[in-house]
Length: 504
Ligand SMILES: Cc1ncc(COP(=O)(O)O)c(C=O)c1O
Image 1 (cartoon, rainbow, N blue to C red):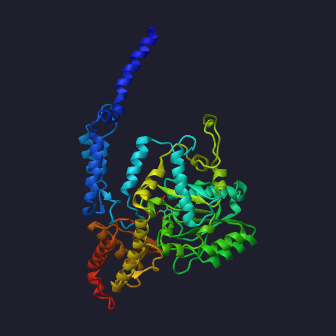
Image 2 (cartoon, rainbow, N blue to C red):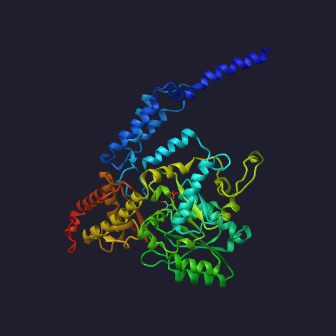
């Protein structure tokens, strides 16, 4: 009896303390504002309303150290103090990835309505991987996946996929499905050959390693001058490998490479993959959503012939980081690699007309990603997405012509919205190290200005500046500002270039 009373008393004590976690619920129940919620929305409002005037980059790696003074402690901290801290560590520190001036790596922006979707997903804490437990979240994700399958031209009956946290994990999932579909087991790995070009994103190599395939033979297929895979070279390599008794099994094409937005010849590669029974994977993490434009559709003809495709909503659909997607022509391939039963899941009845993401992915409990994608698509409609993507292609072409007229060298004409360029001062011609150093210094000066943020790449030992236009907030102003800076910082050297014109 005493034990029971002691237990009840302790429960009461614990409930009183634990109820701190329900503070916001209580405030809303009493029809009162929650100060942290108010601060959050005030922060979002002030951030977005001043975004155009904020810098895209401020080099600062010391401010984040402030966080070290705030380890979790027993007592709650004051809302004001914490939001002041967030202002200090968020504002003007390093890359501002929401800025339209973010022209480096692969930007996206981060749509506000996606944040509202995330907010509701977290508030309601909907489970999102098992249809029986959360049919709405699963249906929403499956319909988004269906829409993506239609976009690439996959047949409706068998195709499928799921939303991942990003492109690297989406590629991993495709590689694992390919590995199992082609039965690449331990003994076969050292004779098994994978083909891609030097342009392939490094996550594909990482994913091969993570998938236990590091000992496969990797063939870098030669490219043409536009950094696209040479299908004839691929065919020859496969024939040669077959003659040697090797086992070609996977070809990875890029549909929009990270360096230069190169698109490999998808139809030709599909022909070869089909002829020799290879799994054909397309990494369209960056380029995939350009299929919403006429240009993209033309350039990615044949993508529907791939066995698997990766396309990232946190790139071409402008979602905040944390959303990729893998789709496959035959969803059973994902199912076979991932499906598991467990006794504690015995009442999660399978519904055969609705696939559960838990059955085709390695994840079980995870963020309800569908809502952050679904909400902006519903509230904005597709039209502005198509327009923004076409705008990005044209902005890149505009930059291409303008930077050339400033006397810069460029890489190939941009297929989509990433391109490379560099300045070769006359007095440095032939001196590769000095040219590289000159352009690295140019990048430093541009990023020190901070209104735009750019990155670079190396191709055959040459340092190239990169332009990556994919944030929905990037418009002509940002490109003109970059051109203006490039003009200003090369002024002295350009005087020596006879055919350099001036940007208006
Ligand atoms: C072509 C391509 N594939 C894969 C990835 C990796 O995607 P994530 O950064 O979402 O993991 C990227 C990232 O930029 C990419 O451009």
